[in-house]
Image (cartoon, rainbow, N blue to C red; front, side):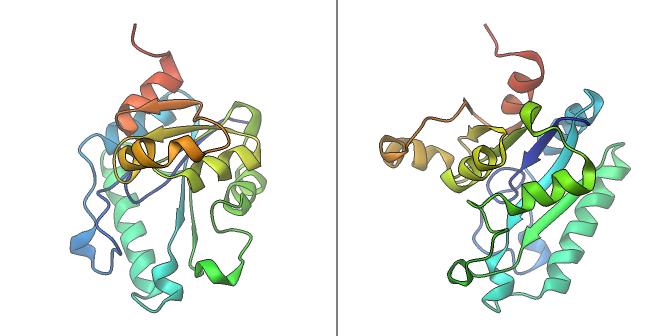
Length: 184
């Protein structure tokens, strides 16, 4: 079984712009492809885990969501890397879905399907719900300062039941610190 790095999407892999209800609104951070390549080059599985309640709210179709993810995967493959899995929850928060972060359902599904070793895995995201999903599944959790991360650290972290296992400026820095240790 391989360790995985589970990656939140909006605010972590791409700019947080609200609902990505058109392909033009999906804009990757410049370091995203290199970070995913590093994950896979070091023998980890790269798995995207994302809440997409805009589908359940009727803001965009599941077909558009799949197209965005397929385009993203093709871009990665063109750069010599890829996701090992892409998992999303299309449900609204009030539906009580077990796959919606902060619940660990998507991580557990990925673990069953991909054979992840959760004890050596990480969840990286910009919100407390990302961290909690990782911890609930048995992984460690890193918070990035992109997206909602900086605001969460400044205004909400004092109320969190535990601190992130790692805080990094962005996805690339988090991946480097996980794979090779923090800069000294």
